[in-house]
Length: 395
Image (cartoon, rainbow, N blue to C red; front, side, top):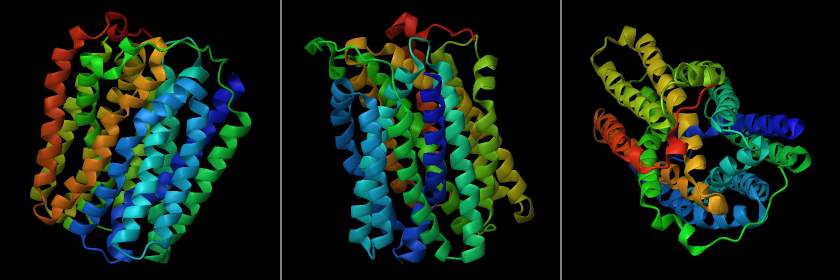
């Protein structure tokens, strides 16, 4: 299992390096290279990624029947196709097609990833395995973001196309690693009974909804930061990459440290703390509008520290709670359904970012308000989830 674990970590790092190259620049590519207005581009990407809403139920059944490794492989190939489609797009229609393929591939990937990590990790609490994968993915993504800034600095608008090509290659390399070296534990077939359906489990549905309020902050940071920094503040072109690099340094080394520092908190309490930190990040980021221009760069880098703390505290605990609260006989379907928290957030985020064309403060208020609602809702949800899933993990 050691070789499988290291191969999975390597594949995730390569996969996310490519994603870091292009995903933060997606809306900028559509607006600056393809010439689509921001409001139209945000709507087109939202319409395209809505296709991802159809994926989790299919992915869950695939995981329970064929295993998560098959789903992850299919997802990486689908994402490679979607990224390639962006290269061929010439207008709004092409953007929608590319967003459909890429969005479906992303949702299939994330719907299967938690289950694959769980199988490779074996019969242990999943907080640390999820944290380790999160650290590697964060490192790869941040390095990709830094590289994308270099590409734009050196090649100008041609750098977007270079980033797209490299992104396609990384998906294919990651798929090859998973296919060749990742061997999950032997799966035991279980009969799935109707009462295990996710729709009948109201506490789990509430967990999905509240995690989605948190997840909106993740996607908003990813695609909203470059738009806000470059189009609203007219800051240096290298700043979005520098912000991602700082986040990379913090999240790629801080995952297991955050687990140790919060080991006395229940998973619910850790998630509430992370959501509160995201609300604080939104408020602090909004404050940049009041800061003199000469201080905006260090100020935004400082607010990234708050965001990173929220991500480190919330991330591994949310996945571990979702895995532990799912019934064993339908774990694949439950973990795939949990992905709706981030699917819906990913669909909504471009539309929220497009509101920067209306006001520089409105998106921050919406995202921060959702984070506050997550804090309140998680407090009420905790007693309704299985006690063993919420119990503090000593590590």
